Image 1: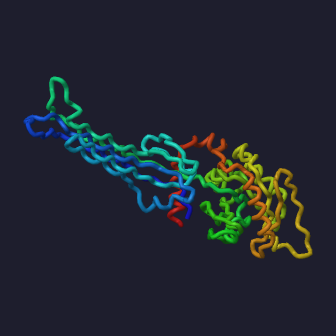
Image 2 (image 1 turned 45 degrees about the horizontal axis):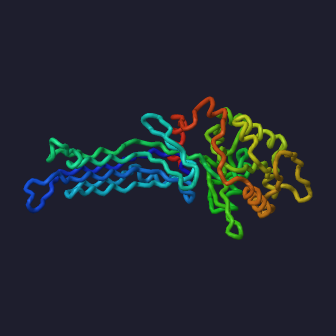
Length: 363
């Protein structure tokens, strides 16, 4: 299951307390202060890991705490600082403070880090309080508490290829036959309720990630059908494969309608590279020529049957060749009608969050 959004509680480690101690030297009955400082508490840090593609692990543990710092010791020894707690998340994860609504950041590149809860500072030992007039202070400081906050992690699906089409265009079937993903497949609209990811493996240790984006309907950019909840997932796919079934009575109109929906949602999405895939070729009578569909802006037009395998190998090779020539960086967030009129970057619509919870419960 693809998890879109989770809330976790993070807590930085408590700083160690400073020490009250005095030197004990032979012949020196009243040695000076020798209490060391406490160690700093560890921080909770998010780190982008390309090996991950979901936030599922956070469903099973919702609270994370970094290690506390050790107390200072005599002989002016500083306590050991607590270790950081590093939580690995998929690239593309956005982070928001639940209580304040503050957008904390977004992790896009491999190894990118974001501190979400800082550890407390270690307290000072009594050696820090010695002065010319007060040479044997008994004063010391306790360590500071670590930062505690609830953060919301939101993942916008990241993939090399995004499958786009109306309900029942054959997207889930294609994903299931070219990867190990097992999306729900049935002959009714909106079979796919959440985005599905699959890794397509080719010969020569080549692979790319394909995403089955739930079906678009006319007016999706206005929220109709499943609306911009799913259009937003296309924002970071490097290229699109627009699927139109050959049993469609008007495939040219369907293709143009899908292109219009993308353009209405975002002018940048309208410029995203795409190919046209004419699916369900097995449903055409052998003696009937396929309908002609013009797609001058597409980088390729392919005929495919996920049932018989016709055209599958050629399509995957062409997709690989195309995406291998694209910049490795995933495109950034686009300016969309939904984000302009409904939510700003980094903000989560409460109704949308509740909707995702309902989907999770159904699945």
